Image 1 (cartoon, rainbow, N blue to C red):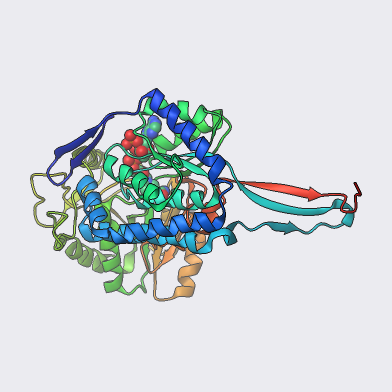
Image 2 (tube, rainbow, N blue to C red):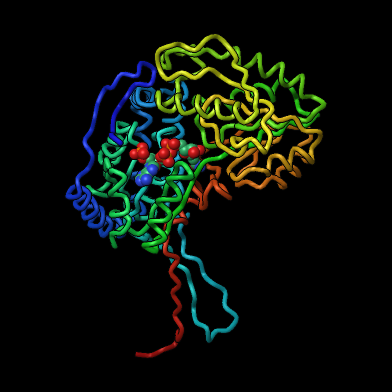
Length: 463
Ligand code: NAP
């Protein structure tokens, strides 16, 4: 594993960064710990001012940041700009709410003799934030913004293919006025991860990424008896009922499966379509996917980006081949993908059945699994027949029915008539193999907090 910027549109290696040494890791932990001693005592007024400034800096340099995201992981430039905006919104969300998210809570007690009980919210200390490349800024702020507001400090271990996005974030917070060491990017090699987590000054770890990485990192945290949160993969169901508005639904299906080149944890990965409207959906979906334009992600007319790396595209091709060996049918759609760059021809997989070894896997790219079901009840059963439990969606004109179906889907988030709502003020989190814990809003900020109980028992004690 090497930290490198490789442009996925050309596969050209543009920059390489050395791994952090053990000495650099030690000094980053020391600096983050020292910064914590200061930051935890810093007023909310100052903390929110730093966050506001960070949001302002993000917006001020929106285009430059967006170009860096597109350069390093290939997303189309409009999506990169939207990611910068969303990241600024999240930082601003916490700046605007400040202390109100962490107010002391009085605990009602039955008897006066139990005392005057309250819960105060205190930061834990240095946190390790391990993040993926698919949203290089957004993933970072989902942890950094709330936790910095709470008074924690952060060591960032970003994905090895977005080293410049990682460095830019450290610079951003420094310019926003965060004390030195309070947010530190480390080009951490895998074999030093446990070392960091074992350090007594490091009090928790938040990981967003694959199940495999989640199990390893949470295992380290468990052994060291430290808090962890895991935001892992998903295979979200996109359930279409017979009374759905077909044109709108197909538009959302095409978008839901192909934005960010299909590399979204909450992409619409399994289209579950009731029999009555299956043929109509399929015809329109095929047309919609075939109309996507692959090309230079910096070109505003491109609607389907290359994947994040040639390795990711090659792995996905092998995964599709395994699904076909297992009995599925693969149909490719649209104009031929460019031969240079990490492009992947959009593919629809039909005939996927539970006995196919690939049936329960996450396909992280422009591959749609389409499953025909007889009715709503079977759609719900198929949606729930997954090891994952991240998001999902239901399409129906009857929103009361939509909500009822949503209640029966075993995931952390379900959207009615939309593939997913990724916003600063909507919480995010999954169940089952999609992980545990929440990010964003008042839920996210609670994850690395010491909810300390203070009980003044003898209120009338005289000294
Ligand atoms: P990944 O390989 O698990 O990488 C995620 C992060 O974990 C990277 O920083 C990676 O670093 C690090 N990592 C992996 N193994 C590690 C180890 N043994 N020790 C230390 N660090 C390690 O995930 P990915 O394939 O890049 O990302 C895609 C996955 O993330 C998909 O499953 C997707 O669904 C999931 N995801 C989930 C969410 C969510 O919120 N639930 C959001 C986005 C993505 P290196 O790059 O150095 O390997």
